[in-house]
Image (cartoon, rainbow, N blue to C red; front, side, top):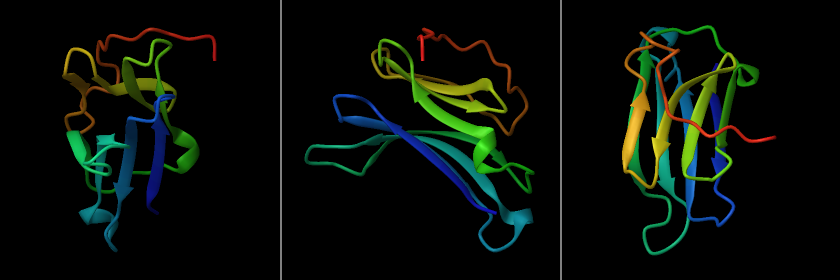
Length: 114
């Protein structure tokens, strides 16, 4: 099963996008978290990528949430409820990922009241 989730920043310029693609065979599956440009001349282009893992993975759409922090500075990927990867758009940094080794990485985040 392929899984996809995304969240666009309120001002509409950037989006966080998660994609798990089995490519016809779960053994060939890959999971990536992308930072996309959502508007402007380069709309739809990838700004940065975090490789989450490769290979078969028992997840569904309900296991994945992509959302922005309260200041809309960082977009995060939550897997099974835990922040697993994030892009900091102000600092230009990325955190987490790495073949699923550490889904509890120490990732900077500003919680919201959502």
